[in-house]
Length: 257
Image 1 (cartoon, rainbow, N blue to C red):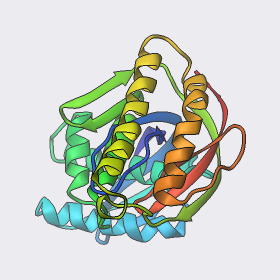
Image 2: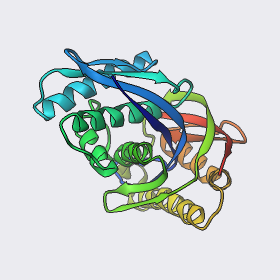
Image 3: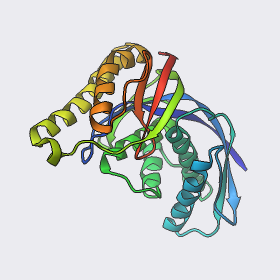
Image 4: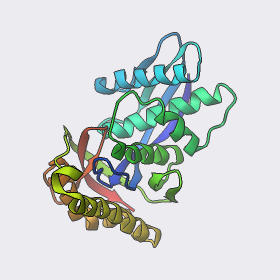
């Protein structure tokens, strides 16, 4: 079994608005040690029962899509406890994609990992969640903070990372749509969600500490999460963030730069 020490990353700023595509700022929040090896069946042991089946299905899709025989065993060996589910899912699936490619002589770059993993996700989701998944995988694969919308619109920041604790995860459903609030109001929400992340990215690039930037943007993040997903404000240093598709988490900032 080959071992990989991978960044655990989280989409720390950015709120999906249904049927839109906006940038997301993802940052490393820790590390996890992952083991991957060949197996006759698709096995996953993440330490979270709710993720094991999803990761196994991801493996099946990956092997089927690449027309490969057999499958893989993937296991979280160290770390990951108390992290947002998406952080662990992104780290595990990115490691799995990299291992499968490298075992067949390919050395994938982070963007290639993101693109291949995207095709193997077993869950359905609105397109507004795609930048969330992509940003977290890109951050995990690079070990850097990233702001990411799509392959053509992304930037990377060496150094910034956060220490956070997970306060809770809840299933959510959208409260708004273009039809329910009207085109002008919907477009304004989409614009606000995007421009808030871009403003944060500019400030981080100019040298502002990531934790301070997140705290400054917290009122906008909270307002969007409440308006779009019904997630209520939690605490002074806690912010709502997107998690696995159809879920939002609340994380509390402990430290960061």
